[in-house]
Length: 453
Image 1 (cartoon, rainbow, N blue to C red):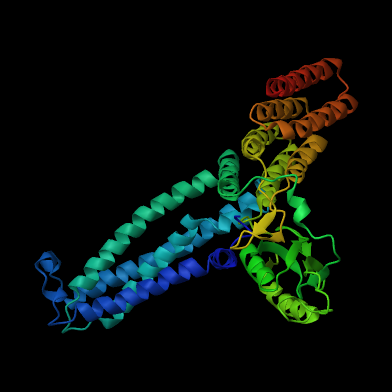
Image 2 (image 1 turned 180 degrees about the horizontal axis):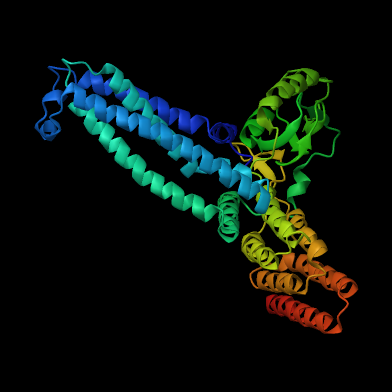
């Protein structure tokens, strides 16, 4: 499971977001490199006498000039990069979608650019401070030149990346590419859902488990839950999913403990009191549910779906009225949804090391994903003939690779789109065009159903 498997992975992903951890780590590395370089390049050290540094026969005054030039240039470029990044943020929030700022802040190109420039600046500044008349700065100057050249080439790449990200079609493609990678992770090693999976949930009355904080669920550590459930020979039914907002003391799971044997009333087969086991599990539960102030793209598949839908809805608003951006979002979104429809949803059961069911956790509910994507698009595009026809075509395209058990869902969405279009479109010619597209889509779904039977 991608977003509910390993709590450590989720915490590391959370740590590396934004413009703090990676840029700061690279900058500190530059400072450490400066100290190490001056120690290794001191007079009498082996590295200070290497022949390949002979072409950098530079005195202390020349070394100061080079290092001060590099440090000053890097500080100017850092200011330029930050300004350009904020301008791109403003354009993306105003013209594409505000929630795209999360993906922009997590862009590794931006993070590495700021960190590399900061590392070059700190390296040059510290080396400049340690240059004296009796020291050899050949190695320090050589590394400073190398870092400067690397920064220049990386800056060119950064500008190219920024120029591409403000193009809405490119950004839609990136979002859906990230979503498809996430879907691959979720579905790669997981067993498929089965109608018998839900029978593993005990029919007894479970104890509700709560957490003591509010926020969006960004990850659930299923391994930790399964391990603690196995320790008390119990079963955990998780009631929330990543992306849900919870409040303090809200039940987020239900713990089922085995029925006590005769003569051991209120006691677990392992000899511990049921109330004691529940309290211990509650304490461990808090670390298995990771919350944050905002939804995160890592692990929350519906978040990426909502991003593309939001771009399409913004394009369909009367103030923008950009049908082709909505069409691009629909096309890319259909490819991501087809990936799930083709492979099927994963099982919600999590097993322990002995292959015993321990946790029920719905990682992916296909009906909810389709509703989150297609219902808003239908509601906002039903009066737009161009977008409605493309939405019908997208559903027909998805039906070509859909598993048989999911085709009724597509048929229901087709019927809803055609029904809303009849009510919203006044022109008879336009209604006929939508009807033809709807008929072709229904025929495609029906033909595939006939082939399956």
